Image (cartoon, rainbow, N blue to C red; front, side):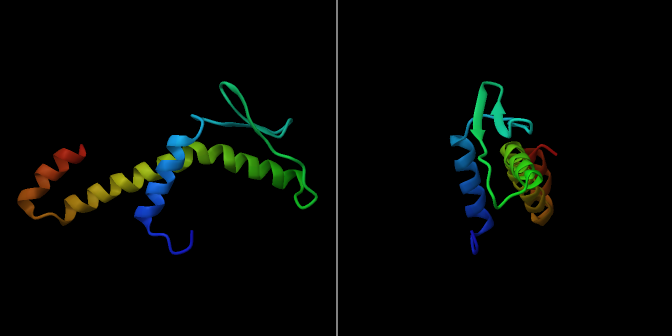
Length: 102
């Protein structure tokens, strides 16, 4: 992902989001699985390279990424609209703010 532009990263994130199982996802630490409302989604195998706390932290990160990444993309897109409105000529600012929902 090094060298990827923000626009490309957003497009890739949205593409992955559209293909993934709907969230939110939940990490169940006692079983070390990630699940959805519909049941088991992924099981994280034990590894000699990871401690139990690292496995739990990794699974928690994966589960939260399902909702966190789309939320971050939405915020970037919202901020881009705010920035565009601020940079627009004064006569365009009112129309741009109205279109952005501000």
